[in-house]
Length: 613
Image 1 (cartoon, one colour):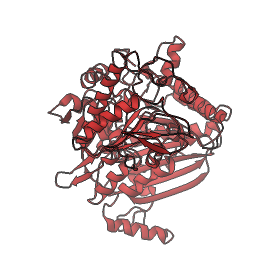
Image 2 (image 1 turned 60 degrees about the vertical axis):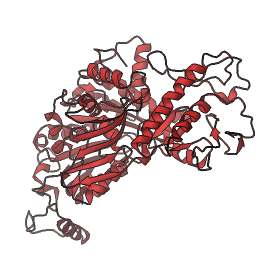
Image 3 (image 1 turned 30 degrees about the vertical axis):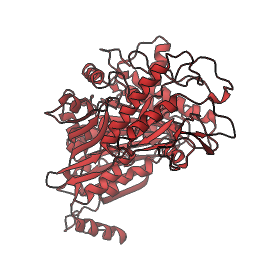
Image 4 (image 1 turned 180 degrees about the vertical axis):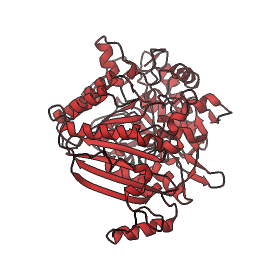
């Protein structure tokens, strides 16, 4: 290596220790050996060395992607840079391309490494440590990792097989599947060029760009492209999962605004897909989840949107009954007056360790919310001057100063049955903000990086069954009593206008999205961590048994629950299947694009019609 973690012509790292305590290295001919606490590493040969040589052959063809090795400072920084700190692990290599061609080269190198390892496995004299992962079977499926701890293996057995590391795709780094122990990580973080075309009202986005970077570019032109309400999320990941934004009820999901996509298939083939060209790929990447290909570029439709109105209401809800009451009244409003207002987005967050329920409601109605920078300045000047009361109910300049002046908010905060009825208001705040940086930054308060265990669901309705599950989970007896939370987000509107058949994204008729998030901190004991995870898992299992509850495209959503149910001999509930209708077609496309299941870590296609998990 060149000292910066880049493969060079005079060295190749052969070390594959899961955890490094030292970054001391020495060169031995063409090999770089990284030692740990002075321990010898003569046994750590084979798999990693084979793949490095394959990648190096690809780089000699003019590719300059970076390969980070365990023991280097760059490797330690990159592997730790995860939204979910519980997913921090020790991959074999982290490879960082800067272009679509380099992504293609890396996939070819990976495929060649798999082939060479399979050949070496036939040689009886092969001697390497016990593998963490078994090689893919004939169908390309990679079994779960074994519990072997390489640090405890003093002498390897005389004959073992080459372990083939799985391939993980990393972008926004929100998924726990984007980086795994012993995996080879294709990190798209350097492929993030963004080009806005205001004439065509489109934006070209690199496969590794984050929502924050997309927002910063579109803001310059007074435009907005729907991606996600979380600025730290990757745009490609949002697209593959559907992608809901504050303007989705008016403009649809991220996957509904896709114009064109460039992908690299498992064999390294570069493909461009549109609605009328490679239509199967174009259909599949719109909400079909990962595991199909590597998205290297997306062209998204933009919308003229600069400012938005946002109202945050925090009410004192001490008991689970009070919290569920807030949720019930909010849902009643969303299914009633709020359902017809497509410019409205809203959410309710119930935190188990807090006595406060938080309600957020936004509007992107341009006829009510002025879209000029000058109008925004007038509002902020008024707000900064102490918010003096206005004589008229609506100001002469046409700029709303309170939620009562936004017609689509009518009945939620005030009226006969407001969301905080009978409860003390802790905070009530109305703002006119820039959409792309100020409103989008709202998620930074709630979705900061940390330790978490998450489950996602689509809800047809907030039924009595679902509310009962939430009420029991929020009780002090059953909850972890910390910042773990339940968040319900409004769907509907434009999202429902598109049928399930038009794109891979399913459950379009669902009125709500539900996130169950268990949290803890770095100082929490293992017992505390298990308690939090058990809380999420119990809610996940109970919710899947409720009518009108569906899984999402996220690969980690319910995998553990499915395994637990199968072990107990239980029949998987309908809610477990995330692609009940589109599963057969999606699975057929998956088989065509990735027949060896190289992208197994990112894939989850489940349907009772397939019985494929």
